[in-house]
Image (cartoon, rainbow, N blue to C red; front, top):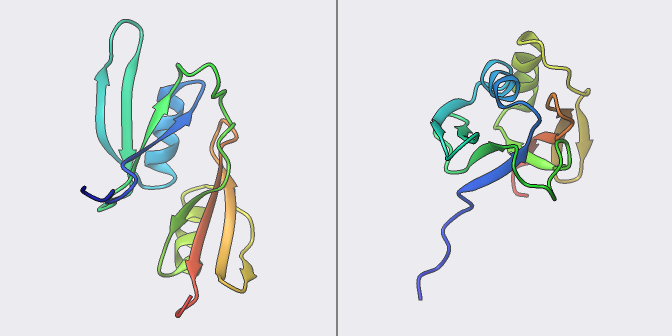
Length: 125
């Protein structure tokens, strides 16, 4: 039986796909993978960090996933200080860096309140 290789797409619930798409592209530097109609009154908006295996889709149609309900998604970086500085320069409201036994991180939310963590793991962890 083939093994699962990776998480492909994570649904992020948002109120307005255009506002959310602009945020993820302009503030985080994500690239558009797809932006296509998906039946009547629905649109598939899929974005990803450059070269990432996993992407996100901005969803408005799941009743049990209200905008802002996703918390704790983690973005990895090799240099959290530089990455945080670049995000601040793009106008992102992001927390100060914090240190933990496993690495350093900062947190932020998207316009709908979905919570993200930007982290750098310590070597050997």
